[in-house]
Image 1 (cartoon, rainbow, N blue to C red):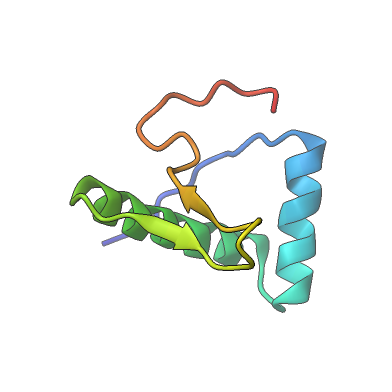
Image 2: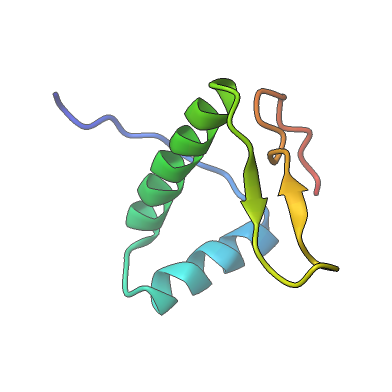
Length: 78
């Protein structure tokens, strides 16, 4: 299967985060985005199957992960 090209416009804040993650992990921005998409897909599939996901931490910080708008349109401007 051939690669397909896509243009992605990001607010500066998100571009800064992408660049920081790429530098930290010694990856390209494209590699970070591909990895993020694979992770998002894995989380989405498991939540759709009825699983629940939690973040660990102390009792005050532990909270149920209900998704970052999974299945909802991007409202932008965050």
